[in-house]
Image (tube, rainbow, N blue to C red):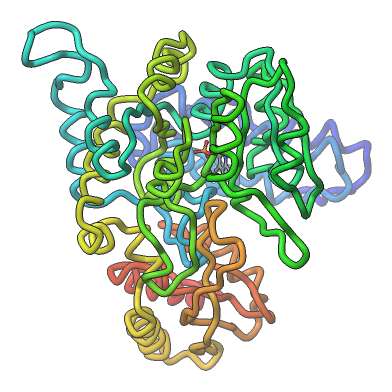
Amino acid sequence: MSKSKHTPENMQDLLRKLPAVDTLLEQISNDRNYSEVPRSVLINSIRKSTGELRDAIRSNPAGFSESELAPSTIHKRIYEKIKAAMSENLRYLINATGVVVHTNLGRSLLAQDAARHVMEAATRYSNLEFDLATGKRGSRYTAVEDILCEISGAEAGMVVNNNAAAVLLALDTLAKDREVIVSRGELVEIGGAFRIPDIMAKSGGILKEVGTTNRTHLRDYEQAINEKTGLLLKVHTSNFAIVGFSASVSLEDMVALGSNHGLPVMEDLGSGTFIDFKKHGLMKEPTVQESIAAGVDVVTFSGDKLLGGPQGGILLGSKQIMDKIKKNPLTRALRIDKLSLAALETTLRFYRDEATAITAIPTLYMLTSPLSHIQEKAEQLYRKLSGIGDVRLNTNLIDSVSKAGGGSFPLLEIPTRCVTIRIDGMSASKIDMRLRKNSPPVIGRIEDEAFIMDMRTVMTDEIDIIHTAVTGLLDRD
Ligand SMILES: *Cc1c(COP(=O)(O)O)cnc(C)c1O
C-alpha cells in the first residue's frame, strides 16, 4: 500500500479510493448474514457509510487514516448501520434512575391486566363507539365515564389525548375571548414546553394574572373580576414548590367566589391522584376527590403520571359544564385512542380498592415500595456483581433518595438503596455511555465519579440483565 502523504493534494486520491455504492452492494448482498435484509436498508446503510467517509476525507484529508478504507473496515461500518436500521427505534430499557414517573423514559408502566386489555382492544373488534343495548352508535367515553364518576364523586367526565389537551379543551370551551384569572404563583411551565400562558393564548382565553409570585389572596381574584371575566383557574404547581413566606387561595374559597359572581372555576391538577399518599408514608398531594368535593366545575389531570395509567387527559366536573365540553368540535382532534382507553379503564377499576390499586399499578407500587424490598434487590445485584471477581470492578451499596418525577412531589425525597460501580481505567461517563448502548440499555446516573443504579425502579428480573451488561463492560476492556 502506498504511504499516504497526508496533504490536501491527496484528497482527490482518497476520494477516488472510496468504493462505489454498487461494488459495496454486491459484496454485502453476497454475505449470507444479510440476505434477508431489505434492499432499501442495504442501500441506505451503504450510502450513509460512504457519505460519512467522504465527509471525513473532505473536512480533514491530512488527518484521515487510509485504514478506514480497508474493505473489512468499511463493511463493519455498514453492518453497524444495518443493525441499527433493523432494530426498533422505540425500545425497552432498564430504568435505574429511581425516578418512578420519568417522562423521558415513558412515564408510567401499565398494570398487567391493563396491558391484557390493550392487547385485546388491539387485536379484536370492540364496542368502542357502538351501543350494545340499542345496536346504534355509541360514545367512546362511556367506557370510562361511569368508573371515573364512581371513584371521584363527579357528576360527569370525559377523556382526551393528554392533560395538555384537556386543559386546552376546557379553556377553549369555557374561556374563549374571556379573561381567565390565574395567580402569578401558578403560571407554571411543565417540561416539554407546556406553559400555562402559552396554552391560554392558544385556547383564545385572555390571561389575567393576579397576586404575586409568592403570595396571592382571595381579594386579588375578587378585585380582578369584571364583565369580561370568564373563568377562575387554579393550577397545581406540580414540579416546583413555593416555600417560606407564601400564601395561596384554597379551591373552596375560589369556588365560593365563583358562585357569588356566577363564574365557573377550573383546576388543572397536573398529576392527579385518587390516593392520599400521606397515608403511605409520602407527602400530601391534593386528590381528585377533594377537588370534586370542593365543588370545582371542571378538574383536569394526566392519565400517566401518579395515576399510573396510559397517556390520557381526564376531565371531571358538573354535568352542565361537561356537556358543553363534550360538544366542542375540538374533542374530535384531541380524542383518546382505543388502546389508551382500554388501558385507562382497567387502571381506573383498580381504584375501587386502594390496597389492590397499590399492588397492581406499578407506579403506585414503586412509589410505596418498602425500603426492605428495595434493599433486597440491591443486595442481590451487589452479590452478583461482586461474584464477577474482577479486581478492576469496585461495587458498593449506598443509601440515597428517589424522586417521584412526572411533575409531582417536587420536594419529596424517598429513601432508597443504590448499587454503585467504578471500574479502574474506565471513567463513570464511559460506563454510563456503554451501558446506554447495551441491549437493553441500562440508564442510571453519575455521582462522585461512580455509575449509580437506584434499585427502586429496577425489576427483579432485570438484575441478571444488568449483571450480564456489567460483565460485558469488563470483557471488552
Ligand atoms: C403534566 C402537567 C400537564 C400536562 O399533562 P400531560 O398529560 O403531560 O399532557 C398540564 N398541567 C400540569 C399542571 C401538569 O403538571
